[in-house]
Amino acid sequence: MFHRIRQRRADAELQRQTYQAYLRIASQAPIKVVPTPKGALALGEPAAVVDDFLPPELRVPSHDQVEGRMMPWPWPVVLGDEVVTCAECGTYRDWLILSTRDQIWLRCRAGHQQHEARLDTAWYNRHAGPVDSTHATFEDCLRHLDH
Image (tube, rainbow, N blue to C red; front, side, top):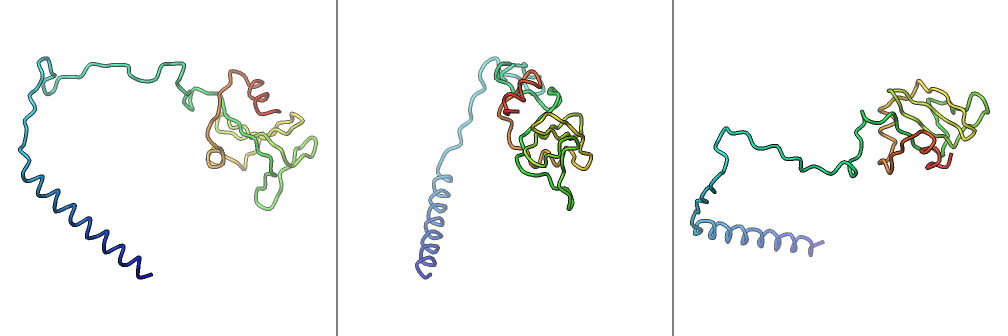
């Protein structure tokens, strides 16, 4: 324990010495005035608009440009004290959770979909990981997620 105290004191002393050296150097350094290059913008002049963003093929679509998002959910969905089951086949795990138009839908492995009003987009965003790919069609996304 005492070696930590000694180490902190040594670190604090080193920081103090470094700061003192910085102050000595800063007070000796002359202040340089950088000349303005010819053709520079005057104050109040608008800057030229340059498109220096990523090229279109490298851009990720924003949330308002995609129809929806989905993620696999291999565990049971438990809401309150109730385990959600598929209304048609009774499956209670291995879901695809779809988020579209501020609604959450559950899709079982058999392809049955049901709206889950007790879940919202905020719940989806808390539990979803980062987007690893985008797909042009719903079927492409299902194939990507092995459903």
